[in-house]
Image (cartoon, rainbow, N blue to C red; front, side):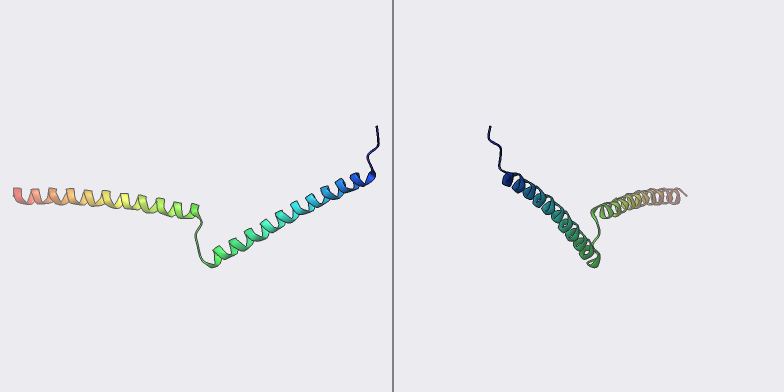
Length: 87
């Protein structure tokens, strides 16, 4: 069986090295883009989704508490009115 020329081994080694370099370059570019986007979000004073959802949940809880308090006040006012008319 004929032996494979050494140039093919050299080319394969170079291709493997190039792929490794490109992979590292890709990761570095992704990190730089992510850092730039995070900085832009901070400058624009945008909130992250999880922070927004937490505040929305707090607002919904507060709204439910307010509605319950309003219903209780309405019931108490009705009781007071009934007591005043009973005199």
